[in-house]
Image (cartoon, rainbow, N blue to C red; front, side, top):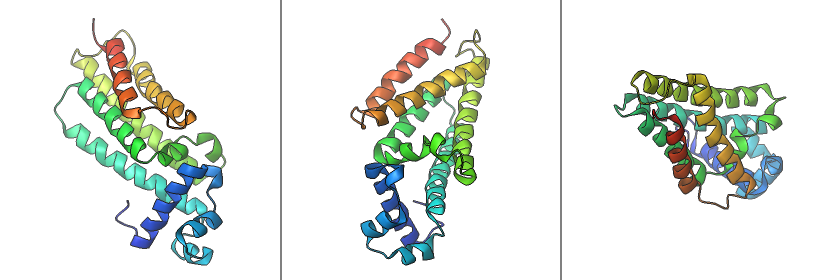
Length: 196
């Protein structure tokens, strides 16, 4: 969890993620959270001002993980395809370990009228878009990835296919192995992108 938060705040976030996973974003209320962790609602409000602030903290913890991963990825001297594979692998591991992240990150419609949450989800999308686009452009420059399609369209295909796979996983109640499906998807994306 987030090291800048207190142990109690991290405990609240962990319980919140579990509630979202099992009861969905709509089932996440301060009352349900209070019952789950055995704190009074007033005790929760001493650590977080609102449900919104808890959700923002959950998204912030994901953003920190994502930014740290992107930094380490940028330092690696490996092929563009290896970088794309690492992203697919890492995200599928994170989502498999904490499926509730999917309910929060992919809740664009639910959060559209909530500026603070919408802004954080947009930031996650931008980080993902930027890293995929950078990798693809470098791959095109290094003659690994086709130049027959513009980098932005290839970014949309590469990122969009992964997002759709994760959404399908959620809609199927997480019934298939996301890591295995991710590996198969990567193989297909590689066939589409590599220079023939």
